Length: 199
Image (cartoon, rainbow, N blue to C red; front, side, top):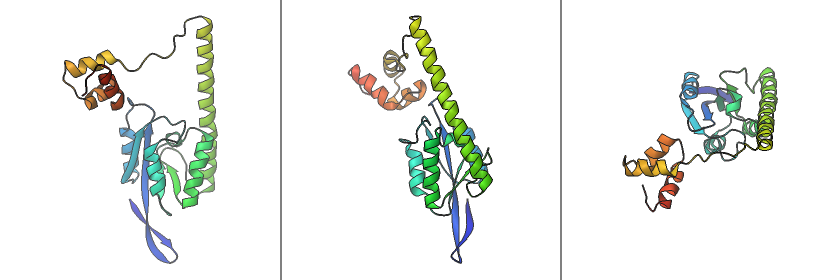
């Protein structure tokens, strides 16, 4: 959606862009995308990648590079954008330098208002606190399991035998195998190469 914006006495247009993210391949982006469209976003960039750091999130980087003065970046919730206070501050600083507003559909966040900025800062602190607590509980659980001799480490997520079966018996290509198993296409190619076959 393009909205009028007066700058230096001339009428310009500001754009509303949406960003959606989920952490894993088996999660669905549909609800976030629908909410952002309903809020007026005509352009939405979406990706399935962990949110503990914004580095390596290519769709977010595209938006950050593309946004211009007067534009608005909209998310459904702030944890879709950042999960650490440092990353949140870095992103907000970049947006501020560009003259871009940050808003959320499900939280009272609007970097044009003092109340919106304060709420944003509070959420960032709580999101980081929750992430740190989860990490501590995970490490405590692993340590307890190791002390009992039952910790075997992470199970392999790539089942090479199943990839081979889907390719040979069901005649599926790498893209469909990756979709079914919820893994990357490159993982499928690697598994098939090990068997001396290509999809």
